[in-house]
Length: 140
Image (cartoon, rainbow, N blue to C red; front, side, top):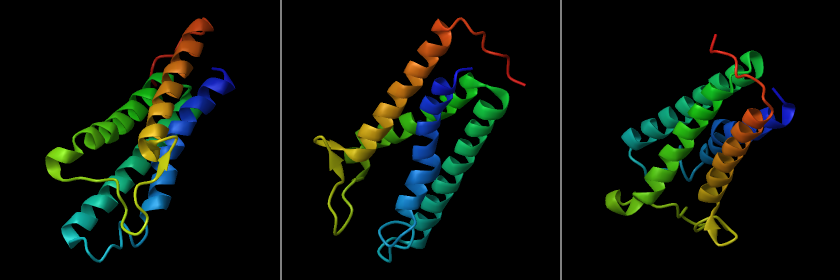
């Protein structure tokens, strides 16, 4: 499997397994005194789950060259976030962080932009892999 394919998929893994936890273990999220303790446990659980899924996806991708599993896990995590974002008005959710507002780039929410780009990267990686004629090894 080409290095470029693995790197494209790894960008998505890095977003949800590393960047998001780094950005959310602070006073605006995990240690937010306005959040009830039950909310904080769900936040930490989500962060640990996503990091665990990311580590597993990276292991499958780099150790076993298992592009299918890595891209499926990426899609599950990223599409779950994008769905939660799309449904935010139905449950009172928001991407506005107190004191900072909503992080935007190119007029879009930065997380939506990042996960959208990572999903495109996954699709490109799958396309490059298929066009290379290289067989995808069965999951081991």
